[in-house]
Amino acid sequence: MEIDRAIRESTDRRLQTKYQNAVYVIQRAFALYEFEQVAFSFNGGKDSTVLLHLLRAGYYLHQGKSECSNHHLSDDAHKCPIRTIYFETPCAFPEINSFTYETAAE
Image (tube, rainbow, N blue to C red; front, side, top):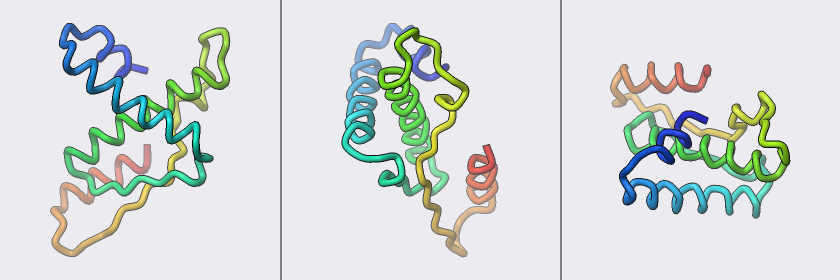
């Protein structure tokens, strides 16, 4: 996964530590709960978008540990089936709504 590879290749140790800690928490949640029991409230903002990428990376790494002993992940491992919730509000910026709907379509 491109995000995981980019962080691991980075020379910024603080960033790597923060990433590893965040991904550990996500992988732990995936180990404790079924995917159907995990949900993510997405609002289209920067923080939410970062967390979405972290969730995808955590899912990818979790799938790699649990399903692939030969280090080749299936195409399904690149898709993150986490239930995502978005609350529409009349005061949201149109760009945020567009970004959210485009992201959901991917």
